[in-house]
Image 1 (cartoon, rainbow, N blue to C red):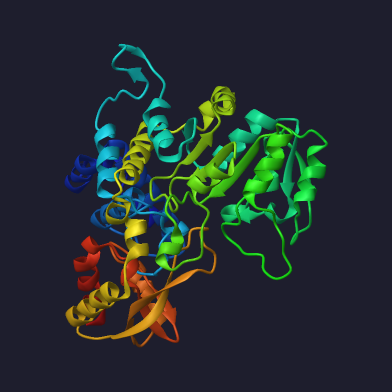
Image 2 (cartoon, rainbow, N blue to C red):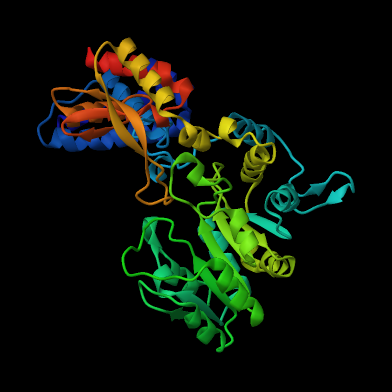
Length: 449
């Protein structure tokens, strides 16, 4: 008890010269909370026999506590893993123009819901609708905050308390426990599964349509493959059957590809244009996967169906803000101008050839002063093109303790994400942005020393 009586009071600490500096740096309320928390901890420690710290030590610990509280939990990282659309690392990096557009619109006020020509209230949908119509040929479009929300909204607006046909092979679960059947139930739709896990026939759809469902939902296998004894009808054939019964076909295409991935030696990923040509009525896809923009869910399709979707109460709950709309518009503009491979990082990475990558890896090795250049593979990732890889060149480092080394990499001010194979630490130039090279080399060289 005598030891505890030697602890300074909160007021004594606040009014000391060092305490006043702390208040000046962080404000009275935050400083007060930190000091109280530190005194509570210290009382417990002293009660267990620890010595009583002086006022200066308590205030130093209070400053350290505040620094921990204020440290951002989300920070930029250098992705040297070789996974292009890395879900855990924020998916697609954005183009310079996209970042600029998002920054500019957030600096002050904007015409988010204001028609500048008419001088009165407008609709936020106008900012992306025209460019999406131009790119895809769709009659109408809507941007929401992510693709899961897009699917939920479409089902809620078009099929609540009604039956929705979907193939058993498409009842998928994607990252974070997101399951298509759960989303369908949440929307109020009644699941009408057809076919089997590995085989679905057009006749299955024809039989299901006789039960007058509200719509047919098709979900692209974006994060897995079914191989072996399999069958699934073409999207165009499903669309044709749906048209004969006047039943809308909704397609969750997922990755949002506007370019043909076969051009880059990858398996074919269905494109938005192909889905439109197949006669799909409503298409949902992500803005932050192969599209290469900020997180968003994009819905395009028939005007009459989109009008119902836009008017549904849930549309307001999942609508996009001004920053997202500005970013999506800027990203889509790259496609409209035919400059996506030069401007959008995802496509720039996918289109990089082996010589470019090898030259960059050799430059790293030369600057670091050690390492070996070895052949390897990059992955598209992000629930797109499962199991697809591209040849690359890797900088391979041999260190005493690989696990400890990559832990140190993650503890840097700008963390570096690498991978370990065969007790070697590997870095893939394909996924490291060019402007990050200098800091990357500097930090690796420092750790090696």
